[in-house]
Image (cartoon, rainbow, N blue to C red; front, side, top):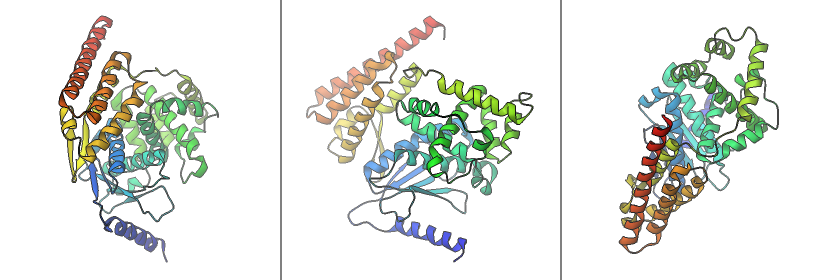
Length: 376
């Protein structure tokens, strides 16, 4: 059987799995905030979890590839509870240029694999949207791995420190080897991914002008020679390959050894707490955004109770990295979720919500005052 026929049978089999009815279970769906991803699954927790990860991937993607906000159809992410393929995920391009992602969703599913599936599909979709259908297959794999690592670091507090610790245990890859890397990488994937994310950070650090940095990323998406892209990005900086490799080796060490602030900035903390306070809950296939007393009023619904528990755990994780200015605000938000899950009477919930809103408002006022004094 030819390669084309085997691929066709695989896609057909995956579609049959997606369409197969499951007794007593509804198919759940969640679309990311700007419509770049559509997550489909049978597990409420799974769909919500991957949906939240897709929201974060979307934010990162739009920061570097803002043009993909205009794509007509979302990238479809299907969680396969009974996947019959030997891979953590499969990404398939459709005839219209869109991408379908199939993630094996079970007790062995790895957080990092989900991050990578979302990142790879977004990079390929950005390449197709900008340069046509054939560009998806030639999208640079180092860029896919870099965005997967950025997503993982954005979701898991302190993971950037893990990336730095692992990176410093071994010398960097050669830059030419990194920028032309092609998978499958097998056991080498972690090494390539760590080098990729540090190269991405170094590149962003050395090109602080956002528009220019986006143009450089777009050039990499166009499957241009990586050395040519680097020479255009840094005119008159490199006369030969050796100088380029030295720039990378020195920059890698400088970036990996640089100290990261132990806290989020005030602005990052403010935005994070605002996002944490608002929950998107899927009820009978329809997404509902809830906050404050509406969460307590709907606490009897299992979807709301599950969402409250998950968000309460997120707050606990983020406490350690929240800027001190906003510490009281996130602490009172966590207490509100606790009261909303357990209280049978409205007054304690109203009081906890009022305390959170007051602490959040006080933190915003303090932030403004600090910025005024420091002339920010």
